[in-house]
Structures are given as C-alpha cells and as structure tokens.
Length: 249
Image (cartoon, rainbow, N blue to C red; front, top):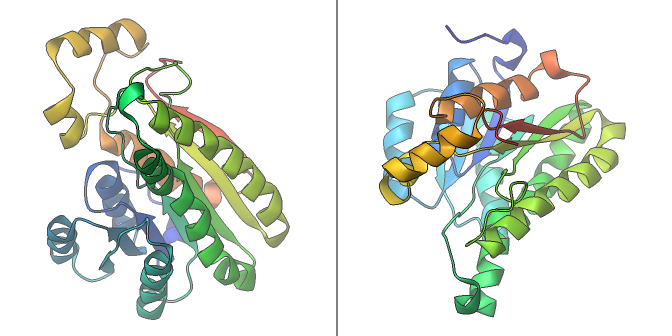
C-alpha cells in the first residue's frame, strides 16, 4: 500500500508530459493522494483517455511544451479549473537516440526545448502562485544518462545535465519564498516506450550487471519519490539531486 501524505489532499498539481510513461504514473500517484492534478501533453489520445479514467480531480490540457505561450496558457487553464498551482513536476522529455554527425541545429534546439527550456518557463509561470501562498514544491526530472556517460544521445545528455544547474539556481532564487526545488534523476525505467524501442535480452543483462538491485525499475518507482519530495514530509529538502536508479551510479 502506498504512503498517504495528507497535506497533498486538495493541492493543485501540474505535471508536464503526464499522458504516458513516468508522467502518467506521477499523475496517478498524485490523484491517489487526493490532489487536483492538471497534466499537459502533446498526446491528445492518451491524455483524454487518462482524464476519463481518473475522473474528478484530473484535468488534461493538450499542449506542445516547446511552444512557450501555449505552455503558459495550459498552466493558466489548470489554474482556472483548480486554483493556484502549489506543486509543479517538470517531467516531459524526449530521449530519442541520435548519432552526433546527424544532429542538425534544428534537432539540437528541439531537444533543448523539450528537455530543458520548458522546465524553466513552467517554473516561471507558477512562481507567482507559490509566492502568494508562501510555499510550493517543484521537481525537475533529470536523468542518470549523463552521469554514466551514455553515448549515442549527446543532445539529450547535455540537456539533462543542465537540469541540475537549473534546479540549483531556482532553489536559491525561490527559497526565500518558501518554495522548494529539487531534481529527481531516473535510471533505466521500463516504460512502454523503452520496452518497445530499446530493451532487449542483451540490455537486460547490461542493466543487471550495473544495478545493485537485480530487477527492472518501473515508472511507479519514480512516482513514489516525486510525490514524497512534494509533500510536507520533505519540507526541509531543497536544492538536491535525488537519484533513483537501483544503485547504478
């Protein structure tokens, strides 16, 4: 049975990239806490389906997060529906593999836009709400890919390493307002996308060789940590980079 954090009940939460994968698990976890969850995603079909399943207390807003005015408008839609934003989880990312010699300027900028840029502007958009209430929690999803020096995805690892710098700066800037900002770095999580595109018997063996825990990590492993980090139980934790990778790094 999952832990229940009573302080999260009724809070307004925004999750980017919440229609599938790790984001979907985070949305479900907050909804189970009794929070009011607005989730943004470009995948309209999955987002609409998840909202219908969760029902009251869940609001899906279709949004291309790389379009900053659209991102701000989507956050405003959640605010109008549920009230001031008290929790933000910047989860959305794109981890497509890419060969260095094939990366164009547009491709590079696109990876930065979805993996990093939206995190800053989403935080900027919710700051006035959190300032007004004198508290708030922001969690930025990073990655351990850059820590272990993973190749074949330089634009992704560069953007994800930058999440740590962003998190530390925002934690320093937002701290005087009672707002906590942390990063959670997943290891290799077995989402539907990972299983469909990149997980093979060989990669399973590679994972087991490197992880201390000899099991597959699943989206709910991340969601549990994110929910805790946003609860008052983590009220003294900010400016931190919390790794959830089964002991790989």
